[in-house]
Amino acid sequence: MKVSKTIETEMPGLGRMIRKAREADRRPLTQICADAGMTPANWYRIESEETKVLPIQTLHSIEQVLGVSFGITFDEEQNNTEDV
Image (tube, rainbow, N blue to C red; front, top):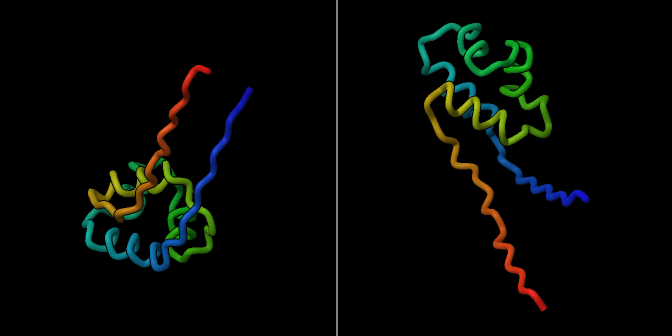
């Protein structure tokens, strides 16, 4: 049996923030992308916000590679179950 949970949040201007953080980094885009495990084309789609839904794992990879945090977190629900 599977249990699934999907949470989405709007983050206006995230692409612009990623671009500014990348531009502040002195490494070439090709190196940043290689470190993040993505292509430059995909990176540009994220920066231009053509990518409409960004997986949290991808965001964390971008944050790690750039050494920044964009402050996006999802609080996990507390699952309290009791035997009846």
